[in-house]
Length: 280
Image (cartoon, rainbow, N blue to C red; front, side, top):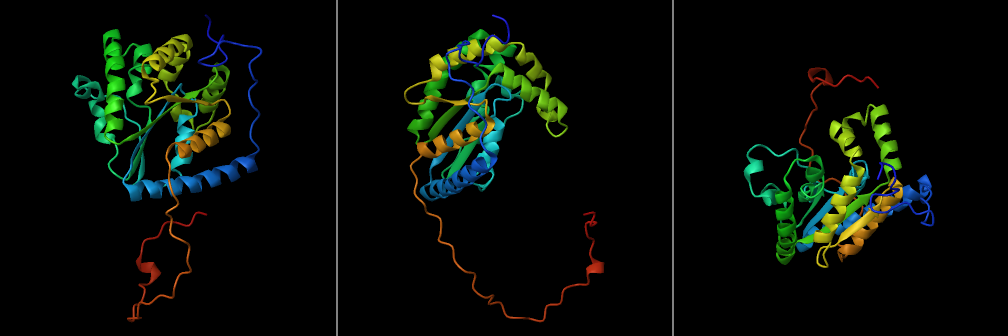
């Protein structure tokens, strides 16, 4: 099958299938996003108060929208409560460890949320397709992964897994935008280029991964990512629905007058301090 013959990574071309949904109105998107982010803050405070441990896994093809969704989730949250883990290439020492070992130190303690921007699922898709691991290692991963995740959940950890789906046409458009935009060019790599030519291999690897790891206890939730703003809102809305929480935010109040007595403090002259040049 030639590259480009799939309209989505997990579907064959189907002329009867629903068309790509239209873009969201910007004002509507910003209004809905703000409302969802307020709810995320409420969720954060509930997680902290109740001592919950939450892990959210973000996987999918390159340029599928994982990073943008993660950014909108964390934008208003306390980084001491909600943190992002995006691990670099394994070190020489890490390659000799049990595969899941390098991820364990990043798991949350009580009152924490950890968002994995790619995770242990690298082994099942990216590493496999790019030839960075053996088929025996992939088979071992499929044996270990469901049990590893069951161990996490038995320990009380809440585990949520998202797969961001994107069409090849939209992926190409986003790749080109990254190349053309100096602010985004760092996002594009030779690995992206290599992976682009292995579209069908990625599809097959993802399908097999789902067969082994899309379990009743720990299902994959697929996010349709061709329209970024819709994908972000849908993902955040679903995340909020997965964890029952209550609003424990303190009520707003009016600041009282300062009570500190004056002790004759005099501010040093401004010319004695080194200031940032006022270019603007």
